Image (cartoon, rainbow, N blue to C red):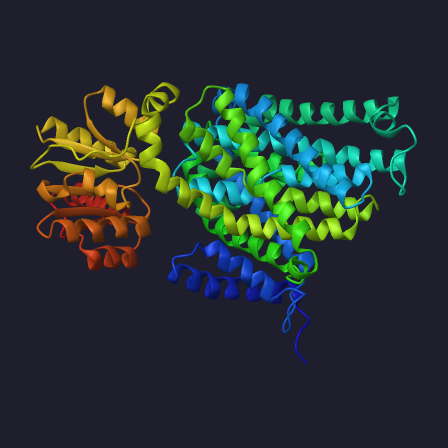
Length: 566
């Protein structure tokens, strides 16, 4: 008799199907997210065949959100958060209010109660953490001003939803299952008990933030440094996971804030440590795996029959998410005198809904204030908006040349460190091109400069690119895997290409394109494992340097007093 293992079955079925359908989607030049969502539909209760455990999949997805927000916190300092507070706070609140009013209007048209419409509108107003961060990471925007605005906006939305989740049971208790009391909106919102609940909620959130900033920023880095000094990589990896998951769970249990918010602050206080980069690398594999399970879990919730059963309400719901929210965010960002390109990027990032929407919908149905039809519409809107969201960025990429011709000056004002226009081929020859100016790229670049060699840097962090330009270094801003960025580096006339980024897959794309542009180019890349060395050499790299091997060679030379064998 087979073992009853719903957890194993859910993970295996979800990951295997996600891989198959994700690979097919990628083969047809569609975002792999589409494949992950379809995998969830395939193992969900609304399609024939195997049905995975939906409750387990949602809990697994929550772990992915925790790890993802922890990773974002590692790259998002308190200084970054405070630098965008003047737009993130009022902008997010105004956009939430606008989308909520639209949702309440649709709920009223469908005959729902005032509170039911409020829950529905709030669910449509908050963007998915996973989808937004994945979109920013794929485009290397997390460290840019636009990325900081988007993440700050998202944090404010999450805080607002935490408050809504705490207040909703109190509101449901005041109104009962039959809708608002005779006093209408004033009765719904008024009263000392509601004010006390709100005050307690805000006090708990403030206490958690204060604890993390005062105590956590000292204890968490100290723990990680202590474990690092034990020399055990296994313990270090376990410590990182324990901090991320433990702080998130403790924040939810003790202070009533979301898992995502707790994990974000844990990562943010750890970002001040020099071990933050290593901590981010250790959580990356699990973060990616559980993020995939999140999309599978969303797909499991979707009943495709609603598209035929309620086509017009579905269209109206999707329009609120894709059009209403986006136009509100666009107008708000422009009101704060940011460039049109920034406004469009923020609007595109927020044009979807996700995990908080599902939580609100589930709570609303459980409290009998939101009809099940409303939950189905929210799920349909989430699926369709997540599917459509990549198209917004495709359109934005197509519009980029026009936007930069139209608003280049405005972009320069809004982001002085960023380039004002698309990559322009630089008139260089016999030069060295360095991809990535991190710790490795900087050392190589400084050595080449001392030797009198002309250097050009390809860097996707706009602030660093601006800093290098200020030092008189030739820079092409953007992702080096993009053909137009490589074309701007004049590789056909270059002597050397140094791929200093640690990502082997992205590095392989760069090496392959560079070799096609200039067959005689000397290409040096870096790798972490023997398999990566062979992969990069197979794509055209002449020399691939593996860190551990070079360290061992230097130690041998010192020990023997002579050059080590290659």
